[in-house]
Image (cartoon, rainbow, N blue to C red):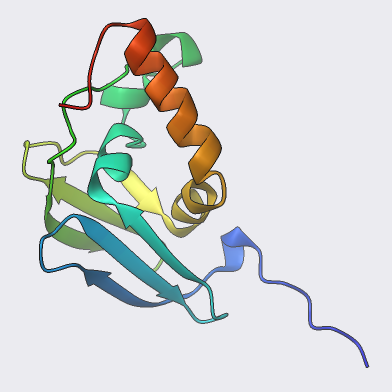
Length: 126
């Protein structure tokens, strides 16, 4: 019996998007059975936008005071991404399926780096 090859992030096909009633959690289901849940705060502070990431790693900004941020709207971008509109006005950056999968797979390491960066810069989650 041969095992079917795993679907890569690049081939992911989204089957469902749900926003929690408090608008603080985004749940994604993929056709291959993967299910991801990501917090609005995490998505906001890890935005793929140039405003947060810059155009070079040295330009990356640590965004504080987003503990209570919510997602106001989810806008589809083709069949490969969404644009999230947050209640703090941030609405740039395309969240591709592969980016969202990567965030979920590396969540603990990314979150710890974020917390460390906040502490180093004297910022808080708010």
